[in-house]
Image (cartoon, rainbow, N blue to C red; front, top):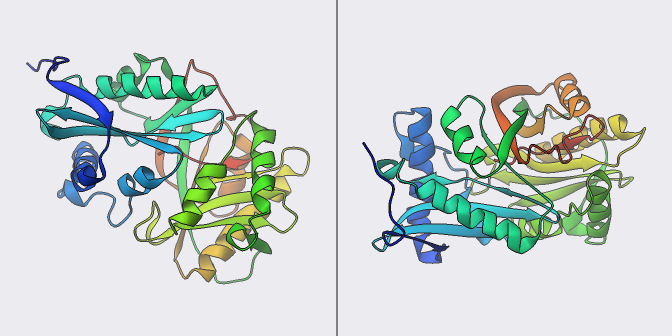
Length: 311
């Protein structure tokens, strides 16, 4: 029988740069152990979640320490009025000791400090343990989320521009995001991708859509992959066509970067977007579930054509 740690045993603060190696190992081993891979420390391969999010200007990195040792972390991300968190991980030999709950309490404090209107997370769709933990803090399963991918084609696609070459498009991206959910703003996420050289932001030539893309090793994509962390098109009657063009533009960008696979996820609550991705050749690699605070839908609506998976 395990027992919860006491407040005197455990402290929650901000992750120190000197703890990044330990934080990365905790995260990989925790997820790899849960999934059951033979060498859990190699989980995620050369993709980076801990260091990329630690360095992002719109993320707070929380650290749980016991007796001066790092025992768990969580990364809380802000996209304007919307906040999400993860990956949350705890040292495997200290599971079920209350560390995840302590990190969650601190996470809720961060959301309160930010004043975000909607908060959410992505987790395993079949894990009652995870669902039970997050439900204690008001998060409830809503829609399945499909993390999908397809091979990158070499043929030309829809014309696009890169925000790194014309930062005037940043305001366009902000206005477009706010049109699908009040206050949604990817500006700091976008700046972090450019500043940290993780990839680039694909913008349709007519500015009716944009996508935040990570590319290659050392990013959240991993070697040989372009990962669309977020993408959206302007709502309205033209959204389905614009979304198809955005998917094509992301494929063209990936081909020009010399990678072999394009990865992107969407909530099945955005049924039109999900169907469009299937039609475009995407196939599901992983099915998770969106847990949203209060069970609210946020921008997971059938009329919204957007890409993200909140991992």
